[in-house]
Image (cartoon, rainbow, N blue to C red; front, side):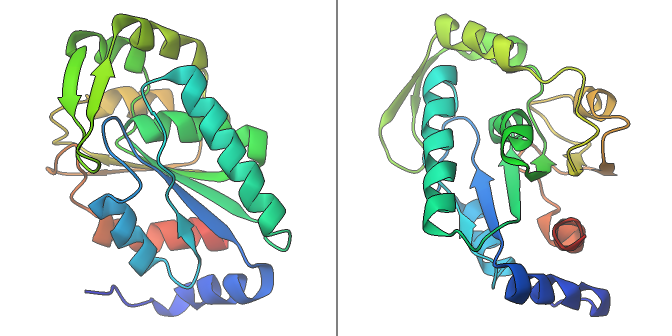
Length: 212
C-alpha cells in the first residue's frame, strides 16, 4: 500500500523534476539489495530512483571498495544528479555514516550499528544469507577491522535523520541516540524491533530531509 504525499511534501516531487536526485539504500549484515525494506523504499520514494547494491557489509575493506565503486559509477552515469541520500539500516547505517561526508550525501540511519566491532563480536560464525541463499562467514578478524571506521564524534555538517525503535532487540537504541546527539534529527518510536516497524510513519520525515 502506497503512503500518500502530504501537502507540504509535494516539494519532494519538485526536487525530483528539477535536480534528478538519487537515493542509495545500504543493507545490513547478512542481508542484500533485494530485501523487503529495499523494495518498500523503492516503491514509496518514487519517482526518485532507489538503488540498493549488494556488498559484504561485514568486511570493512571490501565493503568500502564495493560501495565507493558503485557510487562513483552511478555519478558518472547520471551526471545530472547532484543530490544524494544514503539510507542505511543496521550495519548499513554504519557505512552510510562513514561514506556520507566523502560523497556530500544526506543520511537516514535506521537502527544503526554504531560500534559493530563490539556488538558483532559475540556473533561470529556461519550464517545462511537471507536473500542469496549463500553462506556468510563472520570472523573475529572481520569484526575487529570495523573499529577503524567508526565515526566518532558524529559529523554535524552531514544532514542526518536518525530513526530508532526503542524495542530493538539486537542493538541498544540509546547508544545511537547518544552518539548522534547534536547531529541532525532523532526520532525514537516506542516498541518495534531491530527490523524497524515504523517505516510508514517515518516516510514523511525521509521525504522532508531529502527535499530540504
